[in-house]
Amino acid sequence: MTSLLVIIVLFLLAVALWQLTKIFDLTQVGSDTDGSQVASDKDNNVQGYLMFGFLAFIYIITIYGLYTWGPLVLHTPASAHGAQVDNLMNITWILIFIVQAFTQVLLYYFTFKYRGKKGQKALYFTDSNKLEAVWSFIPAVILAGLILYGLYAWTDIMFIDDDEDTVVVEIYAQQFYWTARVAGEDNVLGKANVRYIQGINTVGVDMSDPYAQDDIVVKELHIPKGKKIHFKMRSQDVLHSAYMPYFRAQMNCVPGMVTEFAFEPIYTTAEYRQLPYMIAKVANINSIRSKKSFHLVAKGEAGLDPYAFDYLLLCNKICGASHYNMQMKIIVDTPEDYKKWCSEQVKLAQQVSEANAPESAGDKSSTDSLKSKDTMAVSKMAMN
Image 1 (cartoon, rainbow, N blue to C red):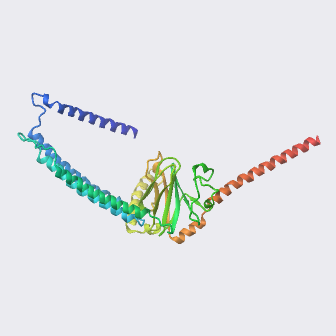
Image 2: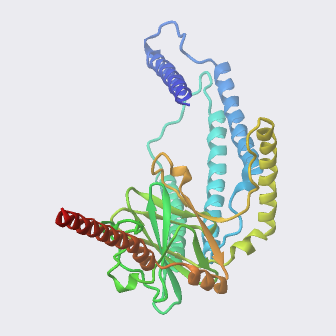
Image 3: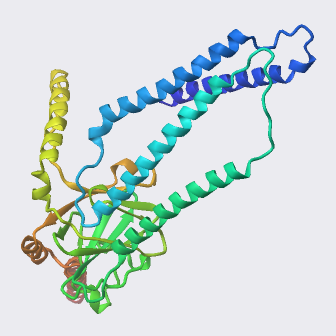
């Protein structure tokens, strides 16, 4: 892979140098007396038609891309605010496509229409106040509308009423895995700091804090459907980004500070698996995996397991060599199943207590053993 990258870089460097030599030649046009650098009408016509060809190429590639990779985009959002995010994205795409289509057609059309011709001189004027007003006013209005809509959506997503029934969850990022800490019955997370990291307390919870006694630390997060989940995010080492694509949620995890995000799940994992588009998508993935498995088995290697959909928490920042593997499963339960799951989890305080207990027992056992040996030695000395 490194060799391929080196070859590509060298090739691009050669192309750049070649283009620089052509630019240098063009700068010497005025010094030529034989007119060898002057473009003919034939050259200008060829360049004009090539512009139209490139315009057609752009739209052929665009249509091909939409047809080929269109089904791979995210489909139905799994959070209450997801529809707002999708609407904002779709409006942005439509505006970009309209502007791009209009400007590109005009660009290549005028390039062809006003191509160089013998005896024709270009019209030059310094400025146009009307033109400048138009292309400043229209983008300003459109961008202001998008920004205002985005701010409205962001405020609606992030607003959390103090009286609202929420579930508080901490997402803790480390190279290269996630840990979740769920607030217990008091729905308040205990204090945490990296200075408290020790043994199984890998997220640095202050075990002396009364609010920390019922906190649950897990590697597979369960959240309930129909309740707003208030995420508080921390990072132990470098900048990470907590990305939950199906929930249309993303927030940076910054070392030394707590960032926050909130959303309400509207589909359980089981319900989302039964959506028609997801059933078709999973079937297509398993069809591809089945073909790959056939070739792997033919080579004497293990085949691929069938794929089943799950919500995932991913890292959307390149945080190191194993960044691609930094993910955690998120399971959306019914409120009843979520309560059952919480009741089955062992509290962090209990885990820490149990982890310390064997050490204390072992230390006591060792001390008793040493005392016994010393007593026997003294007895032998007395007998002698």
